[in-house]
Image 1 (cartoon, one colour):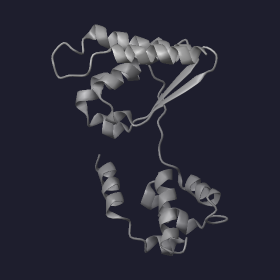
Image 2 (cartoon, one colour; image 1 turned 90 degrees about the vertical axis):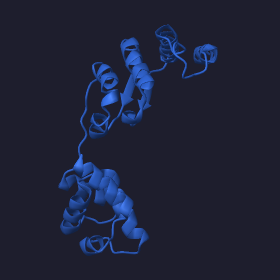
Image 3 (cartoon, helix red, strand yellow; image 1 turned 180 degrees about the vertical axis):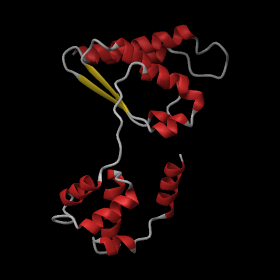
Length: 193
């Protein structure tokens, strides 16, 4: 198939690239361009018959080369049946000034969608959907919202932690639940950012 041929072509192009070394000049702009172009051609070919979705998660951790590749691909694939979805935590990205120029180049190609925490009523809906309460207890919802700031992952993990520890799925069970230190550290870091 066309995708298999394209993959074979991309694989051989990548193998032709010199190994990454610290030596000056090995990662020349021309070499980088050829590699980026091969990746874009591969994705273009793969999307000729079937639309493609490419997801790059947590790009605030990506190196400059990866960000440059994503920006190149976004420009090169604008007219193809490809959606390039990237996610980043804005406060983590801002903290990495060295990568801000590469992020800005990628950002110019993007449609921005800002995600925030769930509202109190959405937390209630999630608790109900997870089958924990029908309907969710208002006090439980309020305490859960305060503890998680509406982050759906934290809501789910907190409910699972209650169940694992044999605590009742109610406000009292949640208030008596000690949040693990690692989770508290992550939350404190996010609040301080």
